[in-house]
Length: 313
Image 1 (cartoon, one colour):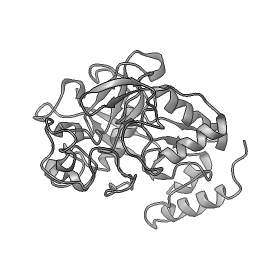
Image 2: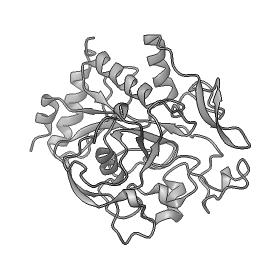
Image 3: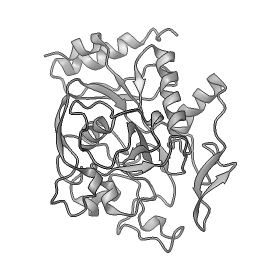
């Protein structure tokens, strides 16, 4: 399908300012129903956590240097219910009607629960949940067909690099665990009434047990919101028990659609273990066909040669 006529104008204005040293590039939006994107710069970082991190889990190492050779465009927010609904309406796709949800007594897979009804209260500007890896990948493929641009799910390395926002500390925001409530919707004291037996963080983020509207909390240095908390996010990669042999170029390590276990990252509104809020933390879903009430996604797209040339020094 054709690219909207206004796209070259948006791209040119947004990227030329950055190319001329005028600060961060303006957000991009490639179609009316497309997610808003921000430019994540190229760079290098150490992926994973060091052996002396007291909250380190074995699958977070060995730490390794990764190079993100080119800037990329990443969703400023997690994909919202409204954006996902536009895809469903446009394609008529039939989606799963089974999701792992909190029933008020336990977490279990319930027939009839889906992105439309995940058993938590949501607005159209909340992140879509109860979407499988395959459904998330299909949404990205639809955006690619809709715009003629290479939309996809982020690799683990791209996501961690973006979540760090130029930091290399265990937490990607000042103040560590005690400051988490200012930077994301997590399992905190406001969630306690819904889950009285669960451990919760000793801070208040202002949202009960459920998702918040995207962008409700502070953006990181790259202009990305909700990289910690709100919902866990699907990665492109297969899950492996550690980072031995992982690519050094930021590419995905296999395709989550071809393996039995898939990676998700970032923590969610029900994340009560502080270590989950570190950018190095990794989680996994047993299948690309699983769906959960606290699991969503965001998209990335590669910049075109023309866009990259505008960013060249």
